[in-house]
Image 1 (cartoon, one colour):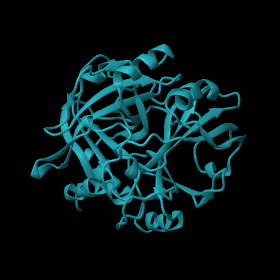
Image 2 (cartoon, rainbow, N blue to C red):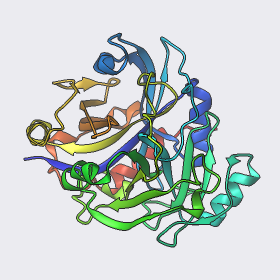
Image 3 (cartoon, one colour):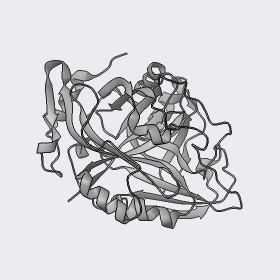
Length: 353
């Protein structure tokens, strides 16, 4: 049997790892690393022109709550932007979501601290307050309300709450994201020109926009930390033909490189995905070591438009690495959350600025 717990992380390609992560610590509170390591990435050869690249990657989280983020910076080449300016409806992950207890307080903090806020506080189709901001790489984020928190702390926001993905046919995409990955609860489904997007490239167009979450979260080790998460599918409804965000570029170039899901039972899940037409495009086939105390099994699939989806089965992760305290997740029941003390112990690995 297999279990899909939900979004684990959002992966972003950046040209300079240190400066990008510093911004993410300041504005998203992502100061707890599960790993931070430089290594070759042979798993990604299929997405890097069949050449093995090297990269520095850090999986980082905000202990107040939210999903993690993987900050990926190639070291064997310089990550670059697309040659064109992409817009709403283009195929791939276009917007990352950040959760906040107070959207208003987050807006004031971002403005006061010099972030590139590109909108005022706007209203989403379901009535949520939101605003949009670009990081120093011009990667687009959206701050959304969140009411599920693991700890209190000094950060003005939590971590990642999900992402917005451009698709060519929402019904085809729902077969993967809703039917298989479990994001089957519709928060809204509207077709219009949307006012909260008015300062985003392509905002004058007509789109179908559907926000999804899980109707039956399956639990899992990090469910208390990640909380509720969302996938928004966006389909162009005008005569424009959307283009792929990573057309003519490779994994690791600037932008959201993949959406990662936390899973258990990778082999059984692989059989299900293969039967449904979403078979693995690459697979470590065994335990992948990502530092001395981090061991996982990674695979990739693609959604109907080629957006990269990473599936991760975690076996071993550090809790307090300098003390040699780690967790063997493989021995725990799939749906059993980690105890609070163990998650809170992650604070001892916090990076302070």
